[in-house]
Image 1 (cartoon, rainbow, N blue to C red):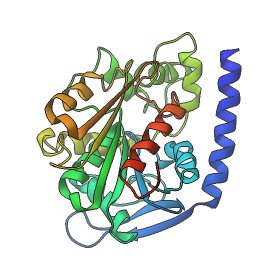
Image 2: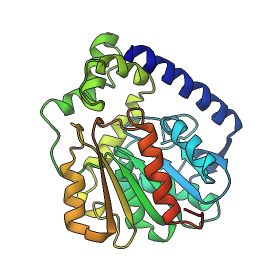
Image 3: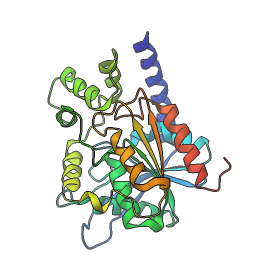
Length: 294
């Protein structure tokens, strides 16, 4: 019964996502010369009102945010979803990168929209890029929500291997989906079945470049997300890749700058696991930091 409900929910989300993407406007902005020059940043814009820009997880596309985007647009926000370089129409150098280079890509999208400060949402690896953006370009970030915020607390045993296994597309589906379930989903009898929701959408080349960028960037340069940007940290209590201790560290270190929300029944994926709770929390947070009525 649970699997049937999950499949029905996944189909409903897919239909809604297709409708959203069909009405979204895709824009392209060229990367300026110098440094990591060449190529372009592609992003989709949907809705009207204050901007919420979303940065996806390791080796994943902006389409992971389709369902959240639908909720944001309905709540009166403009949803902006850039694809990371190496995914979709976003192109550019894929070697010798740092998180600062990837944060600059997100900054390009914001500047293309007029350069006013926006609310940034980052999922997993994306929150590292978002925190780097807030540190490097605080004038572009009015507030930031982090989903599955890692960086300091070590992964649980086996999580790193499972995470990398998600990108080994040449393996049998059953083996790879078991890794998806272990790395991204809260334990449960239907965890492997739920992993079907994330069967596709893995970009190994982008993941390799992003892992290298993380290793090339000292955590001290992005951990605090600058010095003043308000932060919402959403952690899954069953997250094996970014354990909830990370959010508790941030709260202890940064105090009132951080709102900490811990969600039971959620692992590292969070977006497909607890979509309604995630949407409600981010919409409420974004409203507190925008002109929209609460």
